[in-house]
Amino acid sequence: MNSNLYAALRANFPKDLNTTAIETDNGLFYSWRDLERGSAMMANFLLSLDLPAGARVAVQVEKSVEACMLYLATLRAGLVFLPLNTAYMSAEIEYFVGNAEPAVVVCSSKNFGWVSKIAFKAGTQNVLTLDDDRTGSLLDRAAQASDAYVVAESHADDLAAILYTSGTTGRSKGAMLSHGNMLSNAQTLKSYWGWTPNDVLIHALPIFHVHGLFVAIHGALLNGSKMIWLSKFDPKLVLQKMSEATVFMGVPTLYVRLLGEAGLTPATCKNMRLFVAGSAPLLKETFDDWKTHTGHTILERYGMSETAMLTSNPYKADARYANQSERRAATVGFPLPDVALRVCGEGDKPLATNEIGGIQVKGPNVFQGYWRMPEKTAEEFAKDGFFRTGDVGKIDERGYVHIVGRSKDLIISGGYNVYPAEIEGYINEMAGVAESALIGVPHPDFGEVGVAVVIAKPNAKLDDAAILASLKSSLANFKIPKRCFVVNELPRNTMGKVQKNLLRDQYKALFHKA
Ligand code: MLC
Ligand code: AMP
Picture 1: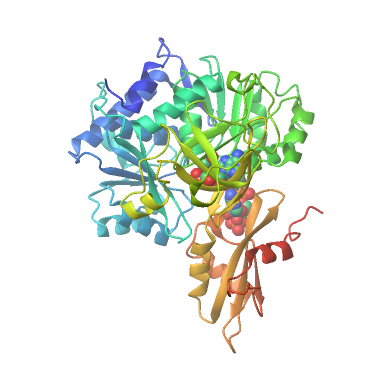
Picture 2 (picture 1 turned 180 degrees about the vertical axis):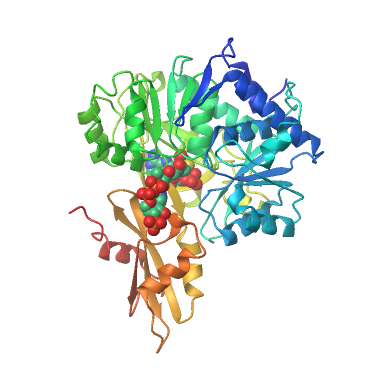
């Protein structure tokens, strides 16, 4: 049997391929046949390059339906998709391209100059462009390829995608996901969230992370459901389209911004069936306000790049948990049906109900390891095969999982991960800097944002604005600390380690709502 993920998605396209699969915010309508043909042509073009099995296709482009087709084409051709955040700048891209050694790099034409230089230096032979207005050399080349049906034979364990994520060292690790990892997760969510072919999803997330690329796109395609495709999140546009939709997915910031719109009413949401939130903690306040404004209860779920989705609040009564159907604020719900989840203490010892410890998981969705980092991979797994997520939580007496913190030093800002070690590394290299600490503090819009606290070398003068400006020239915009403080000393424990908890406490009110 062919376990290629695209084959499974394709099998669920509607019988009538001429109906609309994707409607865009600039008035274009793509049929299921368009998706099928467009991705076949790109797949045939990729196959014409005669690449070795497992070759990587790295993609840093603006969101477009053609970019989605490129993802599907990569699956179809049996190659490995490597999506990259559009905010990444040259040093970041240089690392990813150097580490992944992609055979193909696709970028926007405005970045072709610097991206191609990096790619050619790393040995990539094929650098193509794709813009969000249906132009670019990728489309020119694919236009000459056959649109005849092609789907490579894939094994469930074959790699389908690499998602870069980071760790305490600050250097990104490529999480390797197989066709089987992603298909099992999509199938589980299909039934757990009650998807039907009549659903219409508002797709407002970026397509270079698990949430927008896998949870949202696989959800719609595996069910033959239409997508309303927004090139960028715009709360007013989401509300305009809401009456035509049934499902919406967002990181908490999207819900906070929608709540700021006067047009958010029960009437606007009358056809909606499901609001899903995840990627960062959803505040109880947002959960409650949403219920008041719309009459709907947000379903919060939890996942990560290494595993796709792990837990979900129930969509309807869950027979495994005494038929509980309540979606509870500040919990991430139950482990998904095929996910084993435990909370462990020292030595990977499972803890009792309500005890707080490290969350560990096992299941068909758990990744194949970190790209070219076998030691790092081995370190993250317990002896019996459970993956240590780095999240800290508990399971309550009713079976709901709560995330109470993270053992990994990570800031989640508007759904994007920021690794303090990476930013501190950059600051520490600046002239006159002795040391720095990046901490996450509460923020009304982004949930959490980074704040840098810096110490100068003896006799050196530092300027906070200059530090931020210098970071801006090298790092993706969402990683830039929202504030920087130059101080005389950092709080330390008896071992000399910086006590970030004390710093977080000191700066926690910085962005309080007025
Ligand atoms: C933008 N900025 C951010 C930011 N996004 N700063 C911190 N955190 C962010 N997430 C910066 C901009 O560079 C700008 O800085 C300033 O903040 C204001 O920008 P904006 O115009 O308000 O931002 P916008 O373009 O509207 O983007 C905000 C956003 C976006 C929330 C729509 O960040 C977003 O799409 N987030 C979703 C991320 C996501 O999909 N995560 C899923 C990961 S998967 P300046 O200085 O230039 O003005 C995962 C697993 C799982 O975690 O479980 O799902
Ligand atoms: P990423 O590596 O970008 O996939 O981010 C995964 C991390 O996001 C997880 O390890 C969690 O720390 C966090 N996360 C995802 N969903 C939730 C949620 N619903 N609540 C709290 N944290 C979450």
